[in-house]
Amino acid sequence: MTASITPEFLSFQEILAGRYSLERELGRGGMGIVLLARDVALDRLVAIKLLPPDAAEVPDVRERFLREARTAAGLSHPNIVPIHSVEEQGKFVFFVMGYVDGESLRQRVERSGPLTVRQATKFMQEVAWALAYAHERGVVHRDIKPDNIMLERDGDRAIVMDFGIATVGPQRPSTEIVGTARYMSPEQASGDMIDRRSDLYSLAATFFYALAARAPFEAGSRPALLASHVSQPAPSVREFRAEVPPKLNEIIERCLAKDPADRFPSGDELAKSIGDIRGRDFRAPPLLRRFMRNAEISTAIMLAGTGMLQAGRNGFGLNIIFFAVLVQLGSAARRLLREGYTFDDIRAALLAEAELQKEESDAIQERKIMRRIMGIWHRVWASKFGRLFFRVAGVGLKKPKHRAIPGGEATEFAIGRAATEVFDALPSEHRKKLGGVRQAIELLEERAEVLRAGGDTGARLTQAVAALEKVRIGLLRLQAGTITPGDLTAQVAEAREIGERVDQVLEAQEEVKQLLA
Image 1 (cartoon, one colour):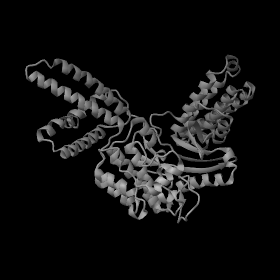
Image 2: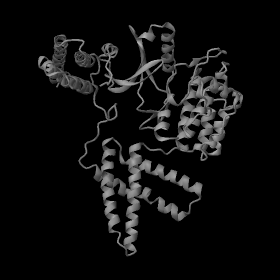
Image 3: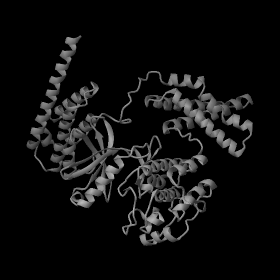
């Protein structure tokens, strides 16, 4: 489950056993290690931010870490990462937050290049909403930057992370300059008093980077960067990206003003201005976008082939290609249906795409005949034909079971699979001495599955999954050479005993049901 097994990792997992199952490390920084984990009771992925134990022994660092968690836990907004719990367990100090399946804004730009204008305005507006919400509650983030904005993989939503240096309430000038120099406001760089408008400066600097793949100011040292923010006028993003609309450029320039009074007074005002130039957002989920691209191509091929046949030319080859694409479309449609989408979802996405195409046609003053030709594929696939196509594509498919973990397996099976993989990797002499391990793993997997299916996600499920987790940890310790097969035998026996106790409870429940019936 994890590529890096350390004694510290295993000790932390022992404390979490039954509640959370650690998967792997997602990243680490100066203020913590972020781990991917599964919430056993809710069977969903979560992220756990752990303060390294040596840092947890430093009172100031420990308090700052807990302050971050408590600050963020007080905020509930769709564009701010949710904090589920804040805990101190001996030397371990950590908090559990929502897992964002995606990448940071910096990673997106490094992987794919600068954002499109439409993407940038969407994400910038969402972060402005999040900041407005935080500011209304007296929280100033102080470290808005591309690394602290996550972009969801499926929903493509921007989510603000890391309130590690956020401040709450009125602020005073300080000689301590904290934050990231490349995106820091002039007043923050000078150690002056800051307020919500400082975050808006950092937000504009962040989306300057998102559009230009570089920050407004670049320098070889932190002092030089800070001096640039304080004394040099910010360049225009259009110098690096000519297609940025003048109105968006004006918004970014206003936010990058040296004097806070010249910026937008609030995140809400900024978000409203972005909304005025952005218009409606018609972005569909990735699977739907892929289907629409294929549908557009296949429709164009079909029309071209039909036109050639009517003109007396041989369009047979094109229509062969069309039918091949149609088969691929059928496969894509089945994938959508398996994922839980319905034809109504596809139709809504097609109509939204048609609106977007209309917006683009209006902008370039496209002729009516071209508008009709370009819009044929929307009308075809959003019509009764499209509904019939999806009905045929769905023949033989069972109704999908929606899971809390998209496309994932239940926690007990994930732990069991990982434990089995470790067991199979052990030397043959160890496997012979631990012949009952596989049976114990399977027993606990099955019992946990039955409990979960019956809606029993309380103490019994926790106990079963915790026993399974301890077997996995024991196998990892054995693999690392810190224990012997004999040491693990007791844990396996305990796991089997727990499974048998669950059996007794399930049998008793079944007897009660039969009596009531």
